[in-house]
Length: 92
Image (cartoon, rainbow, N blue to C red; front, top):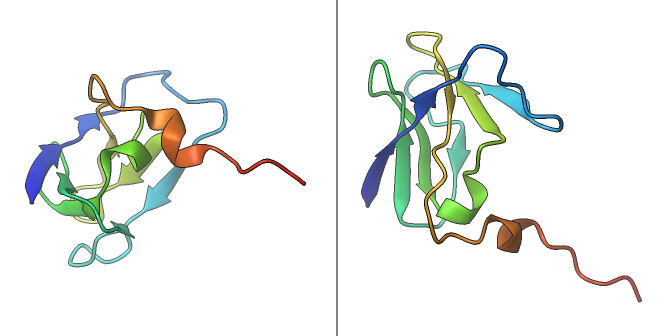
């Protein structure tokens, strides 16, 4: 597993169609996937998302840490096709 640190949300940075997931239990990640990356809080290092593919962790994903209450946002990586994760199949 690769550990990725999220970043603190900037003042006024609110994506038009994003939301904030709230971590209710600091011992349990908000998201679990089947990918290579774990995402941790920028302030306290608490695990927020476990085993997530990079395609699902874009700038619209915000998580409030259950331990320190910091709102974190995923850092987009160069070369990752973020649209790939959210493409819809054609309607027949």
